[in-house]
Image (tube, rainbow, N blue to C red):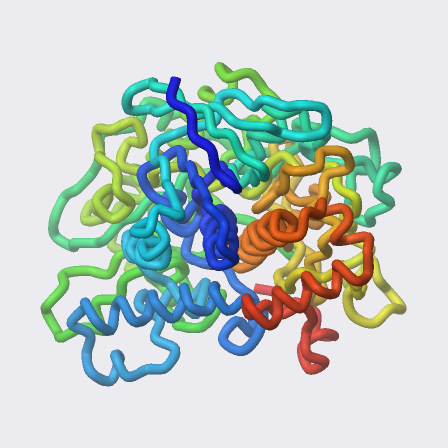
Length: 541
């Protein structure tokens, strides 16, 4: 078995893992970064989810490196794409003009930008990246993780990586399980957390948010790109959840806030305004109208809609066989939605049923139509993972507007290592619960939520931080995951430089303030919201 030694091992190459690597590298540390797929970027790329971001993202709510990521995406389009000149000149260029975000773009562009950000460190040998590697074993000594064994999906060869600090940036918090780190899965009880929207009965580890297997499509009217009928299509065509207003394969879904039925179609209301309009323009990642007329035959849009939320069973805390079963089910649901749209969906123009010109675009998401992902995204979109039992756990009482009745703004954390803003947004769950979507205040990220209750040298670098099932709903989005990972990478480097533990940094005022100064001065973090944003509840969509 090959062995590698490094200062910091980051397992998982999603947004949190990439941000953690960049921070640690900038602070002079040697880093090994592993990733299960052949794309870095996680939910932004391999999972094919255009960024859900803070409402005021152009002005506030992100670290300097996340802003650089966004800037480089825009510059990539300005440099490499034949945009119309008036579009190229837009300060806040939105390549896809999707309604979900001020910056919707193709997953491949995200990959290219991330690779460019890491390239200088790879050239010098300070960073080593192992693609197509997954963790299979962790070695521990008391309260420390001494190394992690990873396996190549291409060769089945294994590598053991010794590291002084280990960061778990996996999508499901896999290292927490492998290393025996105390953690929580699923939904906590209201008796345990006191949260307004937590479960009124006992905790349920198998109550987890739905996953979604996203896909990219374009539309070529007059052509027929109908896929082969999915194996499970007849099931999904008639399936209806108890909390859903009709069949899963339909234009009607549930408004996540009011829980009332709502109907939108594919093309009928192309309002270019955040979180308004039809499904085509909702997560559009390529807009042909921003280029010379006739150059491109179609827009490209990302299907990540309520209809492909898979909630028939969880993928964490179950056997590998059951996990594989549910992942297959999620793929079949997404393919069934596409087939329904191609063959049976009522058309917006009243001209019968089906849009056979909808074409699956596996090339956009880096897969093959006949491959293991069936032409869908490389990885399933994960909203919720295992979460560490932390020195401090963020509760709904700290950030929820309704839960903080009579108080102004979110809780102020003296150990803040970043900020974020999003509603508490939980999709339907594997326990048959409908949406939980309630207002939250712009919030801070407390350092205590990044420190496990026992283990000294493992840090969470993504959705596996110390939140609850409820507060994960606002801490799980792109810029927050990036911020959490970047803070974890910086913390590991800081501790190595000063021979401290993360616990000592948090619980000693002098060290904590020195670390926060490093974050703000050297790395460009924002640790508190400006007063003009702090008291503004997250708007509904």
